[in-house]
Image 1: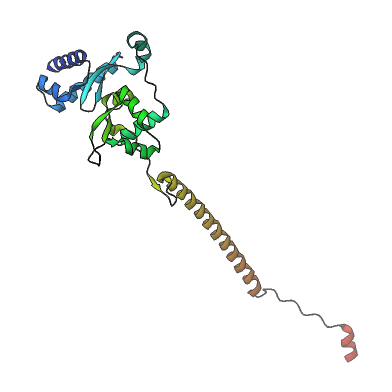
Image 2: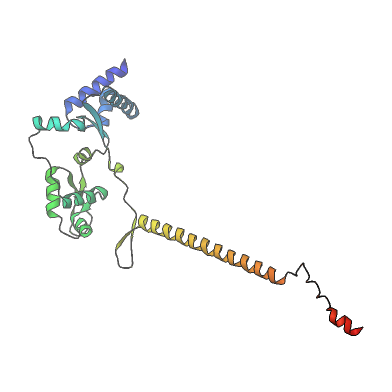
Length: 242
């Protein structure tokens, strides 16, 4: 019964707040430890899923929020949200991904990676609330750094930046061009397989040749088991002698 009451309290808090509620806030209200709060919310998430509810509890970093299911967005958007949907260009998405994988990165570092100016993309991402300023860097000129926001996590369905897909390993070749290690490894494996097949084929051919040489030598050196019969003497020679 106590657990059911705790669920009702958490549901009411998340509904009324309309924002991400930190775990520390729930711990303070319910007087439970973090593990107990996490267990209760996990049970609530399973209840919502089992009953096919239109809402769910999402986790964002160290907090929770009551939200509608993303599968129902197309029904909710025309009624409640009259704002223009964020339309991110390829350049903006590239800039956003660079910031996501490199928290507290400066604009100059972003431009060094992309090779072009990042001013417009940074301003657009700030406007949409997907990134925010993360303080001054300890570099000459004290440039501003940037990081992603909780809105970014919610929009892309991540609980934290740890859930981001792992980047492929890469290295620079002699021409200072990026080479993906995974592709290099696959190519090396393919070459190794080809070399092994070639070696196996060569060994087979060599073995066949040796076997043929041995058979030929044996045929030459082996004495004939059948001796030829001597020619019979001619009768004429015998008569002459008589």
